[in-house]
Length: 100
Image 1: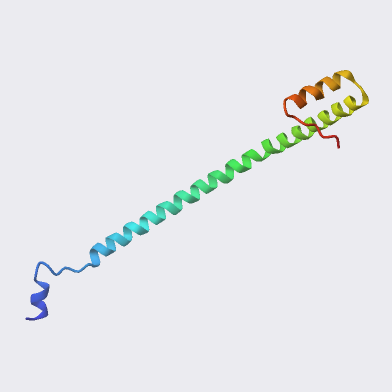
Image 2 (image 1 turned 180 degrees about the vertical axis):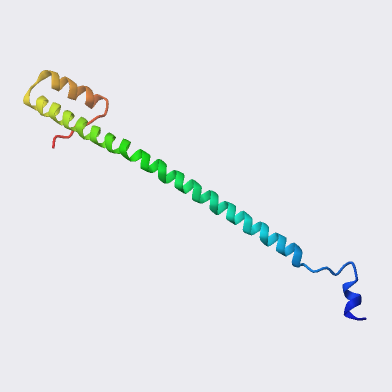
């Protein structure tokens, strides 16, 4: 038996072509996933940047509201009956006002 007769048999095929196709498929899949991941990352970074002014405005409004609440609490301590009613109602709703 020679090596030529072994190559002629139907059961002895090289695994090179199937493995090459498999590797190309895996490489293509990884490339697609990388591309998709980078696209999603860029979109998320853009959305984060777009939300930054909204967050800054919310923080500014929160600071203003805290200042108004603190002033109302000072008025309540000074004896203003309307301010005392407001602070009492806020307390009933579970909102505490800190005086700085």
